[in-house]
Length: 60
Image (cartoon, rainbow, N blue to C red; front, side, top):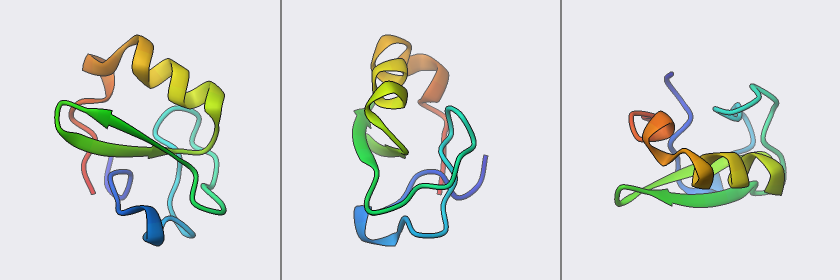
């Protein structure tokens, strides 16, 4: 899934790894195994926190 792990300032053109929606205005950052996964909303952040192993391989 290219383009999902990113710095918070570079999310304007990124897609959420949970729901595939465009991430706007910074999104929500979630730490997964020492990496930052940026998602579009609180609901998707909760899904990442509930199953971090599923999102641990997300890369930028």
